Length: 261
Image 1 (cartoon, helix red, strand yellow):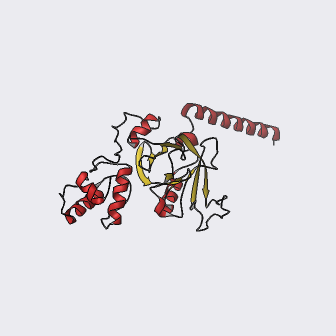
Image 2: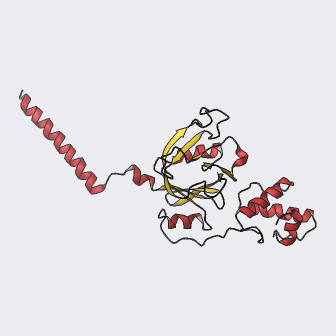
Image 3: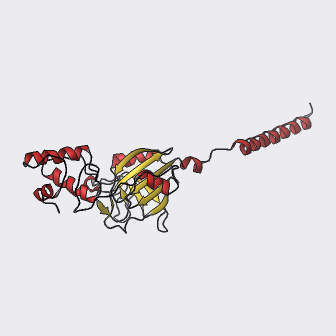
């Protein structure tokens, strides 16, 4: 048996196999984790405290979130998820992960914001569900525990995250940040206090309306800052019960009856 000949044949086989793989990758490409990540991204709009999750250019789900007590607390810009932690400890309060007292909930997705690397700012759960939807945090983005757990399972590290305060639609924000192709859709203005509120209105003034209606027994089925069919129904029920014009429009008369400015 020619042992030397067999070894030489093996070396040539390995060399040709490696060369073939390199040639194949150059010609056809090899999918990378960063390329796959581009197909998923997150947009957080503090004007309405909503988070949008996109996959393959399509808006898949929206969630209510809680953001900073003042606009400056939650950083704005284009970031990425740099770490993912299950049951992260709350180091400031010396509370271990998984403890019901932990204000970070059961999932943490850290962001590379303001010179930090996933240690200070993040998207996380919370042990106070009533805070979701409000301006309540010291800078992080809060979600319901069950919803952040779902999102945690969808997005990998390096997923882009855009945080903004905008009157534009989520699609328009995505296009403006180079995360989605095509023309941006028309922006939807955020309604401010003092304006007439009606179906299609959105923003903090709608949040105030929804809280007021719900507190007096006219449930809007959510406090999300969007004047949709449930809020419209609650307004009409209130107007009917108080002998006002039943039109679903919260103008000066209905606002005065509700004690709103």
